[in-house]
Structures are given as structure tokens and as C-alpha cells.
Image (cartoon, rainbow, N blue to C red):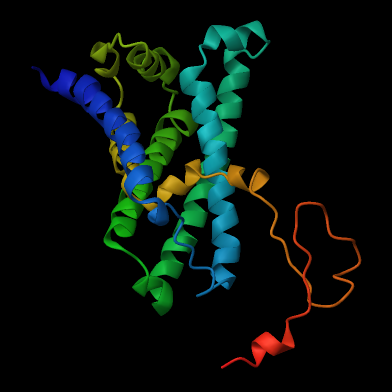
Length: 251
């Protein structure tokens, strides 16, 4: 088995399997650990700046990757988005999103390292996650700046994009990645490793949504006064009566 097949066929599928099965395992056996491990109570000033910047930037990055990698360019042409419009939008918005994300991440890492309480609450997996997340963002930003901003441009929608779509339909084509520049290859490879680590880090909170709050029963507060609040009790609930004084005096 050649190195190209290992890197661009075996590793992607292994990482995808770990990503899916890892989340299932984590949700089944570690529901109480399915959390962001929020440290807002320890420090709020830096978090107030770093968290919104990082989350807004990463949402822009994800949206750009979905459009650029998963949507064929012919579909964009059909709605009037030409190659020039896409290139300008991807370069300008992509650079802005990268700067915003990296700045937010830098603030969060600085906060985690300098605030004693937050640093003590940092786990080993938190540190590993920050390394791979930071490497993925740095390689992606470096590739964008070198090839898209200052270079002649690299048409990743002719190589990386179809490579990903071929993986999704289970018809892998590792040959599409052979001529991809090194920075883009490193960006893709570290991103795959990040997805493999994802289920075992605080990143699982991305898939958390308080859907249960829409269907959970109401919390009923019973009053001890005679009027029991301003509304009459509903059917199905036992009225609250005054405690029997004789029973309270029993030894």
C-alpha cells in the first residue's frame, strides 16, 4: 500500500469512523462529561472578548469551507457566482475570518495560561486540542495568505474539493491530492487528526442543543398560604392544606 493511499484514503476514513463512533461512545458512557467545561466563573474580562471573536470567526470559517469544498462550482455558476466573484469573496472573507478566529483563539489560550484558576482547570486533552486546532488554523491561514493573497492562486476546487466529495460517495481518488501544495496538505491532514480527537475533547459541545427544554414538564411551586398564589390550582394537583398541629406534636 502506497503512502498516498494511506494519507488520502485510509487516514480520512479512520478519522471519520473515530469521529462518529467516538461521539456515540462518549454520549453513551460519559453524558455528564458532555460539556464545554465552562470557566466563566474564574475569569470573565478576557473571555468576554476572546470567546465571541473565536466563535464568530470559526462559524465564518466553517461556512466558507462548506461552500468551497462541498458545493460544486457549477452550482454556484448557475446562481450567478462567477469564478472571479467567488475568488474575491473567499479571499477577503476567508482572511477576515481567519484573523478573527486566530485572534480569539490567542486570547483564549493567553487567558488559560495566565489565569491560575483557569490553568488548573485545564486538562491534558484541552492542551492537545488547542495544539491541533491552532495548527489547523495556522496552516489554513498560511496557505490562504501565501497562495491566494500574495501568490497566483491555487484552484483547490479542482483538487481538494472533488477529493472530499469522492470520499463521501465512497469512491476515493488519492491522485487528486498529489499536486496540492504542502501547506494545503498539512492543513487537511491536521484537520483530519482534529476530527479524530474531537469526540474526546470539550469540542463535543458543538453538537449540544437544549432540545429537551422544549418538552420537559413545568417546575411546580406550591405556596403555603391559604390563597396559594394568585391563580386557582389546576385540576390534577392536590391542594396544599395547613399541617395538622396534632401530628406535628407527636413524639
